Length: 119
Length: 107
Image (cartoon, rainbow over all chains, first blue to last red; front, side, top):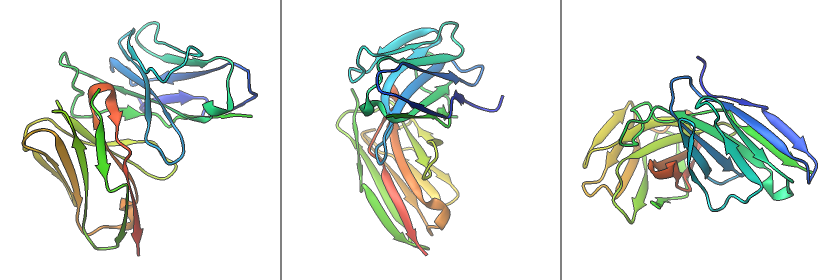
C-alpha cells in the first residue's frame, strides 16, 4: 500500500460542468476526510466518513457538492454545475481512528490532491 | 466547533536561529496534531499530543501541549532551509486546521 491516492491530479473544466474526484485511502483506514485548499490558506474541512457513513458535512458546502464512500473503501467527491469559485486543491486524508475518535499515533495521511481549475 | 488560532502567521528566520509557533484554543482540546506542508505539497503528519503537559521531541523539533489542554507550541532549534513550509496545528474535531505559520529561512 503506497498511501492515499487521488485521481485525477489535475482537472480543468468549463463553468457549469460536473466533475468527480476519487480518493483511495490506505486500505485498513476507517476514517476519510475531504478538504478544499486555496492558495495561502489552510485546508478547509468539507466532510468526513467513518467507514461508509458520512458523519458530518460542512455548512460551507453547497448542495452542488456530494461525497460518497459506498463500501467504506474508496470515496468520490462530485461537484455539480461548477463555478469559478470552486477552483482549488481538493485533498483527501485517511486514518485509523479508535472508538474515541482520536486518530492513531500515525495521524492522518493526506493524498497529493486534485487541483481543479474552472474556466 | 473547536477552532484554533495560530501565531505568528509568518515567521522569517535566519538559518541557525530558533523559533516557536503557538496554537491557542478557547476550548479544551481532546488532542492536537501538528502537520507540515511544504510549498506545493500536501500536509504531512508530524506528531499527536494527547496528555496534559505532554512534551515530545523529534530531533530539532519540540512539541508541547499545555497543562489546560488549550494551547500547544512547536519549537524548532537551529533552523535549516529544510524547515521551510507551513506548520499547522490541527484539532481532531473535524480535523480543523488553523491558519498555519508559514516559515521562510534566510541563508
